[in-house]
Length: 265
Image (cartoon, rainbow, N blue to C red):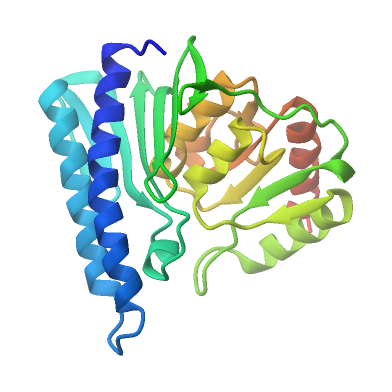
């Protein structure tokens, strides 16, 4: 598969950070039995991975802006381009030795996500997409699923953490979705959930309280795989309002309607 120079830079950064995370993940699994637990170690692993990604990206495109989960925002001389990076999406999974986590790198041009790379080093799955060129998993072309009936579909979701998010609203939405859709999964890493929609593994996905770095890359993947992505109000403001509803066309439409109905309580 031929990739653009830009996408090659993103892939190189994701793979390098992924190798670091994979080494650290092996240590985390051993630390599960310690009384103190691996939380401090994981925080250091997260920061280390972000520094690797930032160094690689800024070396190749020094003028671009950078938004990272750990280091915040760095303004660039090129105001039209911004890297949006989560060096370790699925931190809680990583902390507990669950191999469902990823490096997520998105590129925004004039406020629109135009390229994305998501890499799970635990199983060596590399998702890539660039606007107008398609979405790929390890160089295999991706398409969203063809299922059209909600009762036959499996959708993913995010669940608000303790003391965070609107738990009542989520339960209202879940009640409606559960009554209409065949199955619901909560995997714990939004970037990978969106990648699963692009790969046709999930037919749809919704979540609230999502940061831009959790979904910038996944938005490009899904759209390039033929899917649809909006916020939970049906608008194209995902990165600004922190909600996302995605899927193939009929499932995304049905899921959005269910979420809106649940939102009204």
